[in-house]
Length: 439
Ligand code: SF4
Image (cartoon, rainbow, N blue to C red; front, side, top):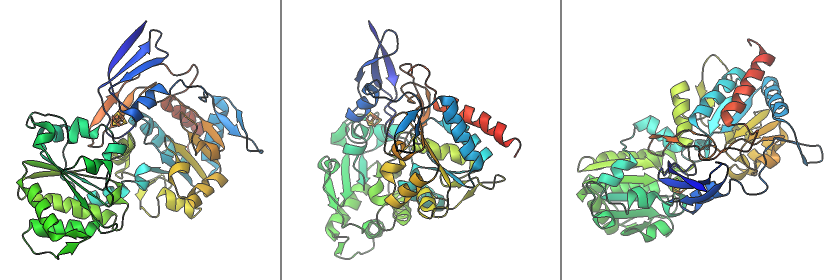
């Protein structure tokens, strides 16, 4: 016997598809099948019970091997480490719930740590640009129902957000977009011919590092001013034709990714893309949306913003107030400069994403990794604390890439005795209060 749980939200990428149907065994312990998700999303559910899953904390031994310890011992190690360290970096948060973040920040305030999330290595430059110039944006629902002009700039949803194109941006039929793909014009701008470019009506190949110049040319053409014959490797005629296509639409959206945030110009690229969006609003309705990658990375920015006023790189070491200075209080810089003497990585993977100098420093200082699975960071951490999988074994709130909060369901029970992020962090907080008193 089995039962089907409907309207399940996928806890993998920033698209947060909320139409999944998960078949579970009658006792609610095993996932049997996953419908509607892409290959990556399916795997998130189907691999939950695969053999080899670590269900109890592990501590690294002097010879490099790991020994199982109890949750109480792991909590004691974490609380003692936080109490003793002069400056702790607490990085990650992208794959846990907003509820867990709020509790984690309570611990961070008590211990006086730096709290940073994955934006520091992906869309941090977008956040800086948005702080500078604002953002004319909309929801993915509006994209589906209204947008007839779509630009993908420096992003490849065909691989990174596999159902984005079928649920929202290219193929679906919406209230005012009844012809689906046929009623939309898709422009893809990238330095390589990607699988997303194959779905576009027009592919514009920009020379690597010339996105700012090309966006500037788009703005200049939109204002009716002359441009050089070639900009960023793109002929003038192609730029004029693309801008005309955008101006002629009823509702357009620019989706941008790390091909724009992490190429020469960084936040200035986003700044000018936002200003192009503004310019296009003189002719039609236009919006811009960042293709946020990890599931709830947007939520981490939201929770930090409503608690401290800053979306990432939040320095709570002074305890009386939060400070924010990317470059100074950002994870990679802190680790590379060896400025932190302890590190917690939660719901993310420093070992997989950070430069080697930063990762090496993390391996040399006391560290804890809180993650449901073994990853590169767990293997360089002193203690690995496995937790239940949020969005599969625990419910919680997460924010989609368009800043819409979505309640995520629990579909199966976690392994017996396994703590959730929230339970673990509450216990660390209680122990930290006992150790530090009113300090
Ligand atoms: S597109 Fe993203 S959210 Fe949707 S099913 Fe695939 S991995 Fe999950």
